[in-house]
Image (cartoon, rainbow, N blue to C red; front, side):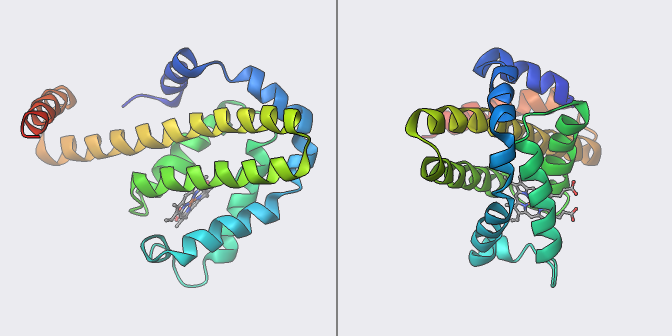
Length: 187
Ligand code: HEM
């Protein structure tokens, strides 16, 4: 199973370094953090209004979920990230959701919602040039989180298959290549 540092290294090499974008967010953090209530409400209004996501929640859980999302949002727009932050994105935001049976497509769709809601808000509150730079920065950071979520999801499933069948991860990799080839050929 890859660790979060290795995954971020790949992300930065392929998509671009995180630090310049973190700097942009640091500059505007105070103002961006004021939107935490707006984000928590918009996010859970959306998740509670769709049957597939609504059924994940337990009775009376919404307040706790909103508080956790506010903390996540404020930290994410702070531009101030340490190892504990990234480890939290991998395990707490990524793998903790696997533990609640939430599929990857829900997670990545929810991240897409967060990014678009942020874009709408930033365009309302800032002049066009600043809005574009702030959105680009937020998008880059939250894309890195989406990569951690997707990778954590896959590695958790691979670990589950490996442990329950006794197949090594290398064997599962080889088998996946064969399955993918046969799916490709059957198109
Ligand atoms: C961009 C996507 C998402 C983000 C950033 C996010 C953020 C968070 C955070 C920060 C926590 C608290 C984790 C902790 O305690 O450290 C959490 C927990 C939780 N989230 Fe999400 N979430 C996302 C998507 C979703 C979706 C799509 C659902 C439901 C379909 C969901 C349902 C939950 C639930 C049920 C918990 C409690 C997990 C537990 O029992 O430990 N989340 N989320």
